[in-house]
Image 1 (cartoon, rainbow, N blue to C red):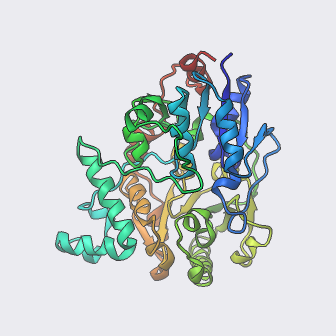
Image 2 (image 1 turned 45 degrees about the horizontal axis):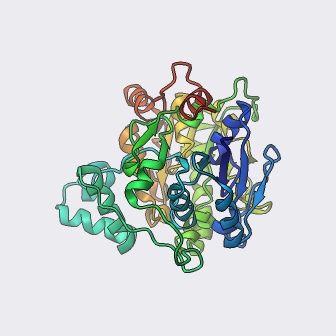
Image 3 (image 1 turned 90 degrees about the horizontal axis):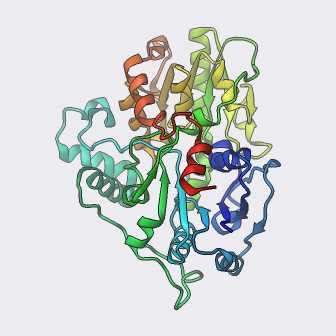
Length: 412
C-alpha cells in the first residue's frame, strides 16, 4: 500500500506546513517525520508548536533519520523541504529508492537583473556596470555576490550551472546509495506555489515535473477573518531580521545591528503616525520568544494574527516578507522600506525583487522625514494584476483546490 510521508523542519507558521494542512483536510493519511533538530539550532531559534498536527516519527539524530528512510518503499510519496544539507541528503537517498518526492517553496520570484535600475540607489543608476557590480559585492559579500551571479546566469542561460551537493561527514556514510542529478530531477515533483516559474531556486530550475498550485495565500485563505484592531491602522510585517534563523544557518550574525534596527523602526513608525494620524501595529514574527515584543517599545504588537491584520489594514509596511503575496492578493497598498541593517542584509535583493514587480518605490527609513508618506500608498493596479497572474494564481486545477491536484497526480 502506498504511504505518504511529510518531512518537516517546522510545523508553523502557515506557510511552513500549508501542503500538510491541505492533505489532512482532504482525509489523506500522512506520516509526519519531525526533522526539526537535524536542521535547526534550538539555541538560535524558537519552535512554534502546532497542536493541529500529530507527529509520527521524531529524528533526534542521523541514525533516527536513516531508520525512517529505510522503511520508506519504492513508489511511496515523500514531501521534503527544498533546502540543502540534510534535506538534500533525504531527497537523494529516497530518489535512489524510487520514491516520488514533492517539494514546495513560498518564494517564487526570479531574481532582479544586475542591470535593473530598481536594484540600485538613485545615485548609482547612471553609473557604469562596474560600479553597480561593486555595489552588489559590497552589500552581499563575496559568497553572496557569487551566488547572485550564478543565479543570474542560470536565469538567463539555457545551460544551468549546477552546484555539487555537499553531504556532511556525519551523514554521507560510505556505500550509501545517493541518486544522481538526473535521477533526482526526475523524481522531484515541484509545487510552484502559484508561479509560472521558480528561477530563484536551483532545485526548481532542475526539476523535471511541475505541479501548479495556487499560492498558499489563496489556497489556505479562510473566509470571514475576524477583525483584531478596531481603529484604522497600518500593519508592519515583522521579520525578526536581527535574530532570524535563516541568517544563523548561513553563519551570519546581525545582532550588532539589533539595537539600532529597532530604534530605527520605532522612529519610522512615529513619523508615519504623525503624518497620517493612523496607528502602526506590529504583526510579530511567529518564531519569536515571549520577550521579543519589547523591541517595539509602546507600539501595539500582535502575534499569530498576520492574515487578520493584513485583511483590515490601510496598508502593509514591509522589507520583503512573503506576506506581500497576501497583501497583493487583497489589493493592499504596500510600503517597502530599508534601513541600515536591511541595506547590509544578505537578502537585500528581495526588497528590489518586489519593488520592481509591483512598481513600489523603496523608502530608506533612516533618511525619511515622513512628509510625503501618502505618495507611497498608491498602488499600480496593472502591476498587481500581473503579479497575481504570474506569481499567485497559476493552478492546474479548474476547481483551484490543491488537494484535488495532489490526489489526481499521485492517485491518493
